[in-house]
Length: 122
Image 1 (cartoon, rainbow, N blue to C red):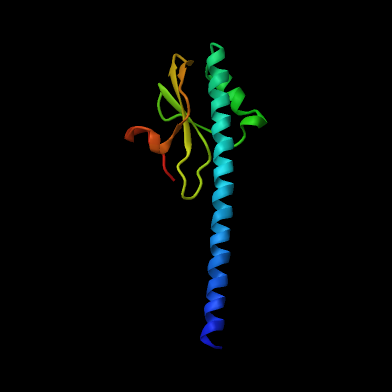
Image 2 (image 1 turned 180 degrees about the vertical axis):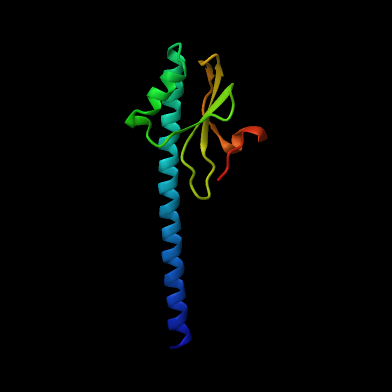
């Protein structure tokens, strides 16, 4: 096999690899946007009513919020997270809780826009 044939095979492999990476990035971007929209919708619905933790659990059990995960690491601050994706920083909705009532469900944060104590990277 000559050098030109070997070079064209490497070029073909490089083009295929780049195309696959671009497609993967597009898919991740679209998925990330969909989950952020889910968190924004959830935040808005919790803000409309005097919600409690039962309301939050009920909302998260609905198919339209499928994929979101509730983390209860603290008695005063709970987190609703998007699924972790390789090479991405997931979105987090912080929910402040007092006596089982939701005091505040802040707007979703992306890991890089948060303070260091709230960062969630995969």
